[in-house]
Image 1 (cartoon, rainbow, N blue to C red):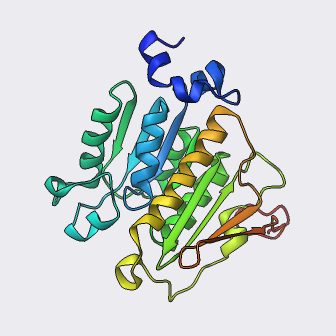
Image 2 (spheres, one colour):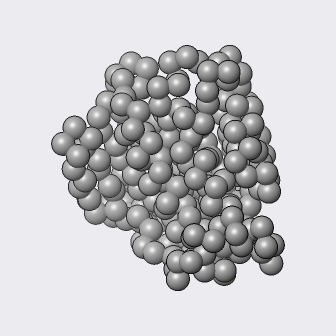
Length: 251
């Protein structure tokens, strides 16, 4: 059950018929893994903690750098030089001391990533490189766990949900294949802070929808964000039967 304090803390979202008491209880009993605590992971972690997701697993092996503070709003000046996980833990404990926080301070290899994914209900990929996204996707497909994937660079963002529990859902590999060897990072190409905040906030919203059981998740759809013109575009994405990761005809 929810305590009186929880009923008060979450009262504004409990008022929504789509969430109500039952949805809030589902959030309280839910767990999520956030891979990356940078520009995307910052709003994701803050909003999921504020919303009362019962257990947040935080994965990042990097430390806070001064250049991060332009967009990674979970960290502050006093955090520079600290592990990002520790900086995020302090902020989230202050925001909501009633939730469980689980730290992963080292890079996740195949085995540790598989264990981390298996331990939660949902995964949010907030990383900034293709190799990590591919590894996280493969682990989610194998474990049958939904994946909320976001990306942002320069003035463009992307967002989609991949849910292997749904037979019609594509996976990340269906959409992006083997990626590109010329892929750039934010440190090379640049990014505007509010864009990653927007995409990360949408990732948090999709996660809440999946965990609380309301709305229409962004499954089979890719949302494209053009920050320069403030435009949104949606593309339909189909599952690839021959996909090397989730395909039914592969091999």
